Every structure is written in C-alpha cells, then in structure tokens.
Image 1 (cartoon, helix red, strand yellow):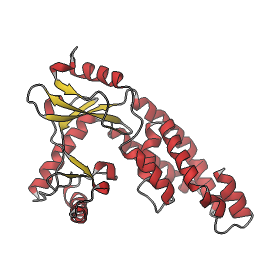
Image 2 (cartoon, rainbow, N blue to C red):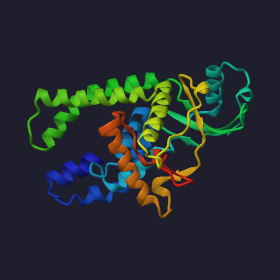
Image 3 (cartoon, rainbow, N blue to C red):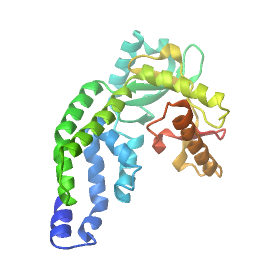
Image 4 (tube, one colour):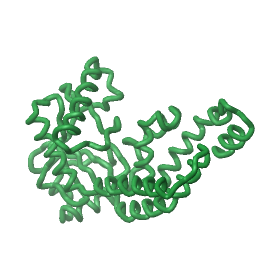
Length: 283
C-alpha cells in the first residue's frame, strides 16, 4: 500500500517523483477519511487538524478530510434525546423546547448540533449534545498514541537519515500530551460557555464589532449540553459574497487580538467553525 509506494518504489527503486504514490492519492485519501471516522473522536480531531495543513499532507487528502469539519457520522438521535432528558432532568423535552429537529444539522468529533425553539421565549437555538462515553474513548486513544509516538519518531528520523535521541522522543510525547490536554478541555461544555461569553465581551470592548459569537443561554448549560441562540450564516469558505476577503482580514485581526491582547485563543479555527452571518459579520 502506502508504505510500498513510498519506501520500495520511491526510495529503494529510485522513483524520485513518487509517481505511484501520487497516482493513488485520491483513492487513499478516501480510505484515510473512512479510517478516521471508524477510529473515532481522537482521530477525527487529528483529521480535522490535517485538513487545513496542506503543508503537511497532499491536497487530495486535505480535501477529503475537510468532510470531518462538520459532517462526521452522527450518533443515534434517540440516544441524544436521552442525554438531553437526563441533563435537564425532564421526562418530556417539550418542557424545554417547543420544537427540536429530528436529526442533527451538524456533527463533529465531540458532539452534534440540533436546531430547536425555546418553549419559554420562542427563540431559535442551537442545541449541542456531547457524544456518550467520549472521555473514555479519548483516554484510550491518547494512551495508544503515547505508546506509538516513540516508534513513529524513530521511523520518521530513520526515513530522513538522522539518529533518534531520547530528547526527540520526549519532545514528541510532550506534544501528544499537550494536544491531549486541549482535546479533553473541549469536552467541558461549561468551560466552553464561559469562554464564549468572555470572547464576546472582549471583542465588544475592543471595538471589533464585525466579530461575534453565538449568544449562550446560561440557564441551559449543562455538563454534556450547550445551548446557544441560533446564528444564520454560511461557512466562510463556501460563501460567495463579495465581502468574504474583508472578513478574512477581520479574522486575522481578531486572532492577533486574542494572541497579543486578550490571552484567550480560539484553537480550532478550521472553516467549519467560521461563519459569515446574514448581516455580514464573522461568527
């Protein structure tokens, strides 16, 4: 497969242009997507990260992996409704929502989103429900990654013709640990709600009115459920509006502000998380 095309045909038999490897890219990219989906949340998150890194993976792989940004296979909506009932401690979700979509409108590595209407106010909301048992899955995946990282580091260095030191392995494992801490933090919906509200206040205080965040409904925030007001818009990378280049500049300005001023950085900026709202703002 991939190893044969790269190592045997490319390295050992002198195919300097890696012809066989490049020819098989479209087919193997589809296989990579299917593999990420099958392996679960941790590898879906890795796939999301790689989907915007064409400096690390070929364009064909990046294009396929972009499907992981908001179109991950969802879990059963019956299970999701059970989670909602348990988190809100109700027997009938009509007590909370006058309407709730039968199926998720989007699904990602950690949770999936339903569109609903609040029974109390009539406002349209986005209802994010966390995948059941996700922390146990992440813990197992991270344990496996920590075991495989020294092997991967040694193989990578050998392929590049450089020796592997203990420092190389320690650094690689530290990177896995740091990435894992951030991933686990994403499962804390109460923290996400607090960060969302903090972000909105910070942008408003600095006059960045072209940037917004979904308004959190604080009384409906739970450990495994996050409810925000619904935002009408389209993904920034799929919007054909003439002001998209301006919003790209707004995004850069917002990220520099977070990095250099507020100290709280949005660390998952793939296109599935950036919307152009109907009133021309970046959300």
